[in-house]
Length: 131
View (cartoon, rainbow, N blue to C red):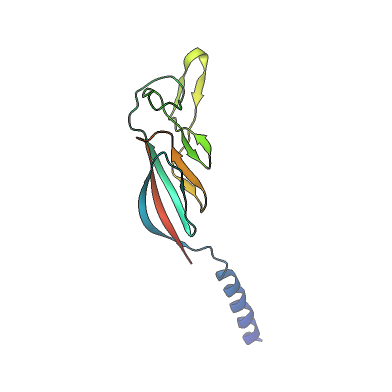
């Protein structure tokens, strides 16, 4: 009886142990600019921050123009635009901008990311998925 119980418990643990999704192993640091980059198979990316080449303080909303240095610019994940605005403030014509996009952002294999402007970059840590 004890032998059968031990066998059942062992098989149960082996089944759940084989379902593990793997561990993460640091691979490299990447800086992603304004060209779409895709997360390779077997890897995940951790976006740590978005650095803009130059920006001033303004109450205006975000902009797509790289020449307007007074406002924050967008970054893209899978073709969708995001803007990292810290805190709250009153904008032009009574608009209030409230956004708390926070880092890190995790991306899985086949997802893409890029910045709006060539002088900006996303700081990314790449990890290997190890079984």
